[in-house]
Image (cartoon, rainbow, N blue to C red; front, side, top):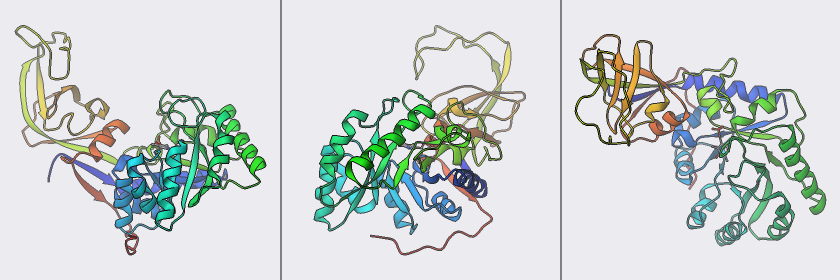
Length: 364
Ligand SMILES: *Cc1c(COP(=O)(O)O)cnc(C)c1O
């Protein structure tokens, strides 16, 4: 079979998605499935659809176009603030975008009006993680400036934590988001229908039984795909962590010294690592490297230890030498998964027992 390849168990992804949807529904929270780690895979998005998810979010408009043209029926949100240069495409292909800049919202308004469309926006609020978002004190005046823009509908507020600085979603910052929603609603006498509290890092907060406030949506990617929360990367009970397996092929396997010899200078990826002398070991090379995945995010099977990697080679130590052509399967963390899913060198094999949903006509 072709290698390297990602083996994708769609049934496990279905189980993870359906489980999280059910757990959060008990708390009055809806799920937007985030597809950015999958390059907008229509197969995986199709499974989200089967699991009852009708809200899909992605940070790339190309991925949204890909899922739309595959016939997937859903509401699509662009969850990264649109680049001014892509605004016409955003208005055309996304139902909703997340925004924090008045200039971009004005461009969205102009493009929507030109195309005879309306475009929904969610305003992102900065609550301490210091990635995207409007400072809370500036929110009211921004809302005042966008409410009358033609072609734009303010659908709600959101925030994103646990990304840039790992700031934890907690009772305090989530209550802050709820109170901003209340105050905007009071000031402008309107209802904000979407209050999206965060990503997989919010699961602990959302499921621990505390006050949920006005939050009625979470955007989940990693927890559905890899079965872990993201604050401490702890496994989530009852979810599969092995829906994805990366399979690579052995191209050399020999007994060699554990230490290099000769004068040492830099390697292809920086300073030479220091290596203790452990005598001769079995060094097994696999045909996969930095161009295909994040080697430091691979979890090898028992008896295989990763020693290092270059662009195209993964150097491992194996307890015994292996015949060339032997395949080794790895589990992946989020970083290794994103790189593998988006690498043109890695084939994808889907395993699925349920029938896929019917395809509808692509929306142009
Ligand atoms: C990536 C992303 C998410 C999803 O994050 P996960 O940790 O994969 O659940 C949610 N919201 C925004 C704005 C994102 O960029």
